[in-house]
Length: 175
Image 1: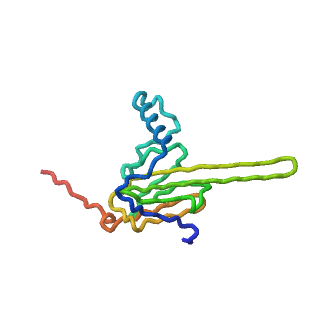
Image 2: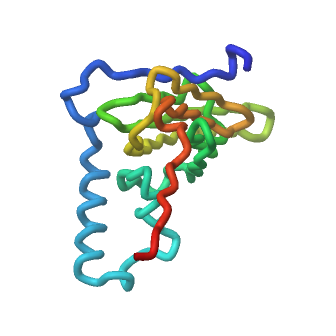
Image 3: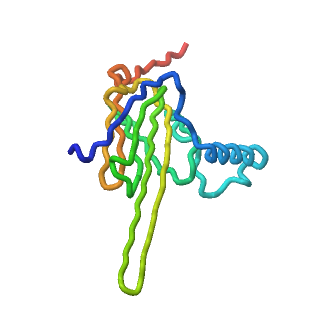
């Protein structure tokens, strides 16, 4: 893998400080969503809203609608988290491990301006996202790697040696 394609993974030293500060409007939106869920169940739910249960090994935080879809696959020696992040480069994505959680954040800004005879074009595009996943036990956090290729972010979460051992089968005996 080339150096240009690697995304740095940072371990936050502030282990006791809790998750990073949240945006007040996102918190308000989550609270309003929870209120509608409590009073109306599925009736109020948007048909395009993502399921919040997810993989039981990875508990995730509620996210805004612009967060990228994420796939989590368990392999023999690692978990692999894949997210579609078109338009983002490796410098606009931050990955942190904090208090047993994996935080993926990204922010994109682009401006385009064209001036020619007869017309003027000015476009601005801004967007950001944040996803958080509770890591399962048995992840070697010092060896987590991330790469970005053609708009697809891949975060590899290697398992510790103990977690890689196969499960022991217990035989059931009829008494």
